[in-house]
Image (cartoon, rainbow over all chains, first blue to last red; front, side, top):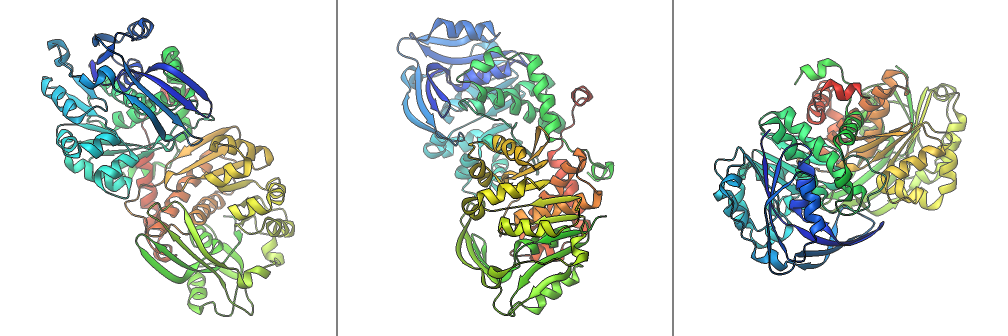
Length: 311
Length: 311
């Protein structure tokens, strides 16, 4: 089982949704990713917090087996995000962003961290993602995510980064914007030409597309009756996806990649059920496997072997 | 193989999309449904056209084996619809609706038609759907569709109808509106309580949900690089779904219902590839089976038998 290094944000989020609200709760892309991936593999988190970062959050992550040797604490305040969701839980509206100590974040990897076999560069400045990647010693798998802000402000740096990446996670609307294509499938094809062997287009409650080679595979989300707080669902998806792949030891097997989508889907569905990281904190492997099994039942179609043979 | 009776509109559509336009082309819910369902079962179309309905359209449908004994021609003009789609091909904007002879449509079934085992009541006035249903002699399967207009204007008549229906097809937004639920899954549950054993929530390019008993299954759409004209995709979906079920001879087998979703999905994807019914006119069973096989490959996930056994 290959250990995973994740570089990204650690934040205190204040979120309002149709189902309630949370204030200064644990959040950030690296946190959601880690709490998800740790179900499958060992995870080292690289990030930065301020002096105000609650001890209990550090204890929580440490208690879940996440290696915090790369989580620096520096003078100043922790990154804060304030957002809300309407009845359509698919899109967040950012009300406030206070980068605080995150504005000066320049990760320097230790020799041990640099030898990680699997690395996930969460949605930070693509130049910073590239600088982290340059510190790595021959990682077997490099994956990254991004966000609208970087697509608008640093598209060239992002494309440059993508030429060095194996797996790219991106939201449907962001993929269309980045490639200037009106269609998710065409967007995935264009991104594939830039470098990533695997492109994962995330569609929120509508599931995900997985592009491997020339072919695109499609998956629905896990049907949920209520979404309390979708914050972190995308990072949790990536955590389940990469965690499962790390446990398989590679990303060249299509069956592994398809199952990785399902594990990502399952993990994201748990995240949405409670505010902040609450559901991920208590989740055990038994519940996770039960939902994986449930998801398989909900999406699988028994077909005549003639149709499978034709592939 | 049970024969299918479909009651619905026959129209001349003028459509503008991002990919081009069509003028006074063959359309209407009963037409799309029939051209799709005839791939799987024999279909009798019940509808009305005016004196201006082009002979070539009648010949086209007749040439595809669709029984037109129930297609009446009356003095006046054929139903016309004018609509357009933006870059987001998911939602049509209606520019003009001229009901013409369709305004007086009151179907009277012949004794042979009334003995059909499978009936699809396309999206016409729910009171008219109910009156057709009352003329039927013990159909084995009753399915219907509806649209926003009837949800707004005759919600009680629609609910009354649903108590007599086995399978209900409805768009996601329409299901939420009809049930006043913010969530597709909850909407399907509420509709299920009103009567239909099977509820199919159509999500356009995002696929479909299938509710059977207490469980909801989820399916993506077939990934398409371009959508020329999505008009009729929903009716074509229903045609593939019902046509396949009719060929199975029942709707109580979950595996049949899941495969019916895939056949509906495949048929809808063909419809979107050309304007009007052009793609459906030339489609043969061999192309259809090839795409079914392709879809199965794109959505199926090989899993450890332990997860299947758990179900």
